[in-house]
Amino acid sequence: MATDVTRREHAYEITVDGEHAGLAAFEEQPGVLVFTHTEIDDAFEGKGIGSQLARAALDDVRSRGLRVRPLCPFIRAWIDKHPDYQDLVA
Image (cartoon, rainbow, N blue to C red):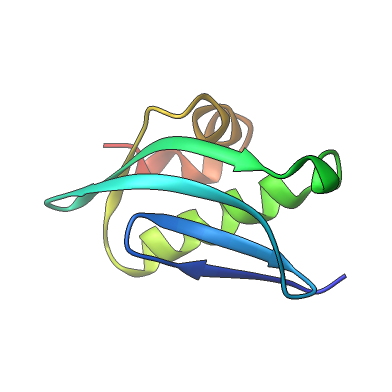
């Protein structure tokens, strides 16, 4: 199962073997990405795809020198479970 995460204009999209599997939507503000919603397609639920998406998106945010405001409950909970990402929260 090959996954790929791509940053689009207002969302990070994850694909599995080339098929759309989900996204994490955001709004961009100066120096901050505000994560507003995350969804994983039903066919990919329970397979860790959401965690892969969250990690890749937050790693990209870090590499760009930005911070996050996790309004999305999924992204907020993921950060809470991974304290090494707490420094990204604005």
